Image 1 (cartoon, rainbow, N blue to C red):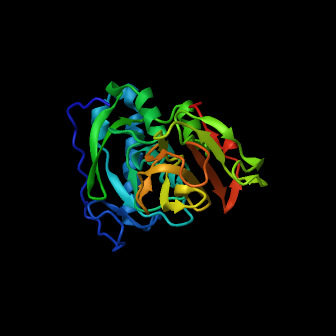
Image 2 (image 1 turned 120 degrees about the vertical axis):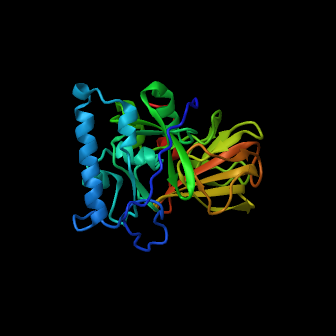
Image 3 (image 1 turned 30 degrees about the vertical axis):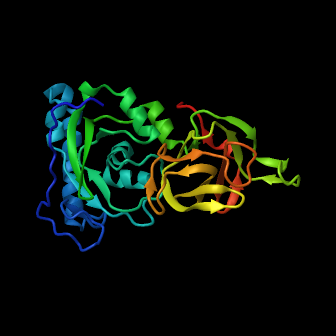
Length: 310
């Protein structure tokens, strides 16, 4: 995304006292609960209502995107276990597209950590897209329709192109709602599908709990979905391997790697480089052994991998 003069959006504590939660942003107005008894929530809802009114009247007033962007205030909220992106969006009267793009959430799922709540509906496209969804947003939107802004989050500045009043297109919505996983390789050849097979090394017949994708030694291997690296190392069968947990129910495994480019307990996004194809462990040639497990049970990756944007 081309850089233009950046409109700096600084969000400061606006007379609202932090509640002592360790992971609440200290420099943002804080909402402790989505309840009318919470002063921060009351102010937020008033800001959202005002922004919605201004967006609805744009055709009559001629208000431009820059003016709407100047009205943007970002609040901090720590979701509880009962919150999900859709109920939260409904409670806050803000489209879930605004919440997901500002917080860089690529798939629906459990929310963790501090969530940023924007007071103005719109789409936030990061300056450096990482996930598949962000790449799609960046490639399908015209830069002239947005306003460059910077938001403070986690003590760091994140640059976005903000398009006030915008929502997901049908393609972007389908892409976000798709729960499937992206392919971990850009180029590959399936040499062994999921299911019953004769092990090429031991000769025993058993269920092959993954998908073997042949590719040249050193081919880049990417994370199939956002998640946390929960295990990595070297195993007699899997060779050099990585395990990523995706939410509470899913894990993915990447085996026979030649190189590991991941750090234990680090967070990765869809499409992040995590390793290189190899032939370590019990292997007859360079390939990636890829597994998906739901609640500990192996699932057929061929039915869950998302190949191309809809």
